[in-house]
Image (cartoon, rainbow, N blue to C red; front, side, top):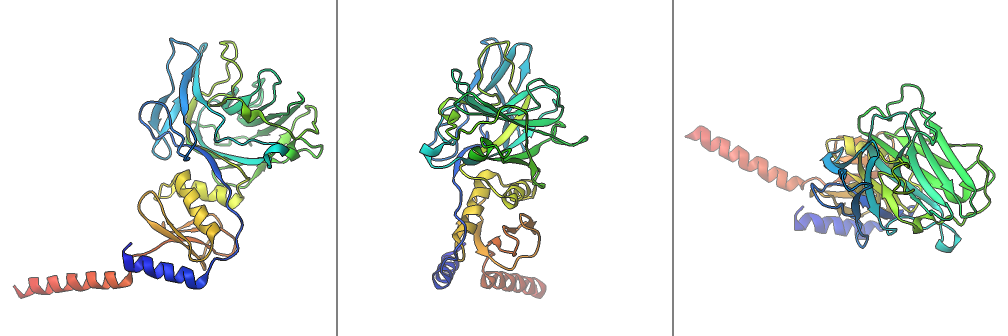
Length: 361
């Protein structure tokens, strides 16, 4: 975009002013796994990366493979060997009253064909008090095929286990890439009302987790993230008898400090499968532009400049003609700023002149 166009956009923003919109949640942590070797970096500024780890010196570390967006990280478990990414506690939510909030979102792409074995996707656990936040496929006993489990255990030792069995024939674990977005509210999860956690699969409608028969806890001082976090595992022990690692691949693993909406879940999925091929970093940029309101603009990783727009036609969360994203039910969203019409006309004029010269010859 040239200087004249940027000036025009800036003047428009100054004249229109900013519209009041909902605050944008903070992206705390993002592992794109786009490296081809070495330890994965966390792309959020000021947050450290992770360390590729295995529970046996004679077994392989996770490896980089082609992912849904760029590269991904492939985890494996075989016999008594498994591997994962060890992370610091930076970039993960610190829940409880002392930290000011207790909600969040995990967004990731997963590719696994194991529908019966418990596999750790992401988790943290305090080995002494057993307070934990653990996201797995299937359940601890391995009896619920093709499911996702969310274990929330507070620091008073009470178990709060939330399970969701996918419908028969669900594609969630069919060895193809699928997007999972999980939101939760710890305070609600630890109350007597049955909790409030849900999952969106491939941008579809929200599916509610259901509470198991474990004891309910009235505590909301959950703080498991003060312990090391694992990706591709659940942070229990390094014992060879405690096999809880993932046998599959993960891509674009991210954590947010608030519950993303159904529209945002759909948008993240659609942006990735569209020819734009945008991951979480670019989705976060577009969400931020929309949250800033009228006149706001920003650049994505492919060099395109987007701005807040109104009057779009389509469903909330959908990509329109590879150039626009609808982010509410009223047709408001963001759109790529086109090249100035004057430049297009100049280009057409030069092309016509060249053609005429060719004919004269």
